[in-house]
Length: 246
Ligand code: SF4
Image 1 (spheres, protein in one colour):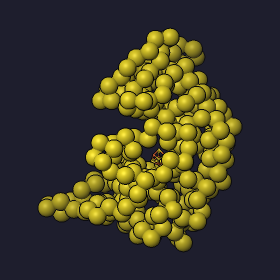
Image 2 (tube, helix red, strand yellow; image 1 turned 90 degrees about the horizontal axis):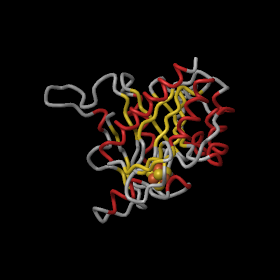
Image 3 (cartoon, helix red, strand yellow; image 1 turned 180 degrees about the vertical axis):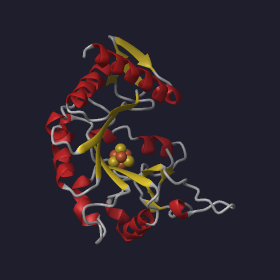
């Protein structure tokens, strides 16, 4: 999935932020992740073209938007309107915005947002039940054409059933935490959430296992480069399990 980071840097604001990968990666370059800066080179990446006049981000792409910050962070106020205009200028591309600051959503949308831009997906992170109870009800109440829930990094079984049954959630995606201090991702939690989504016919993805994965009472250390592949195997296992239980 292509990434677009119009600004970089963020403040820890939630239990899921404890081992934030932005902080982990910035630390290796002696960069202070707490300072939010506008990208000097890639602010307008979705509008950039190659020498052959093709967009660098191809038509039909889903773009992970602002994944090294938060699209709704306070410091981005002077830049956000222009970012919305860039999003609007690429109706052929879908922008996936995942936030922990959904409470700021209504004050950050552009004047012509209406029921939402067709090419924007709004996702909230619900890493535990407490954060789900704060963020998911707001997600249900905001205008957006497509809404996702990310249980990432998963910290416990998160009961999403009250939100899934509304029929408003288009995808639940679960992922474990990465890198050295990562908290454990228990496959039983993933499994429970998977079966909850099945009950309400909500599409489900298990996008990464995290670095410390617990399955069938056995702990596994997973290399970062293998996390996605292992998660896909876990997902295939769940799909097989559910097809047998039909
Ligand atoms: S909101 Fe996201 S990017 Fe910001 S500190 Fe938390 S985990 Fe990191």
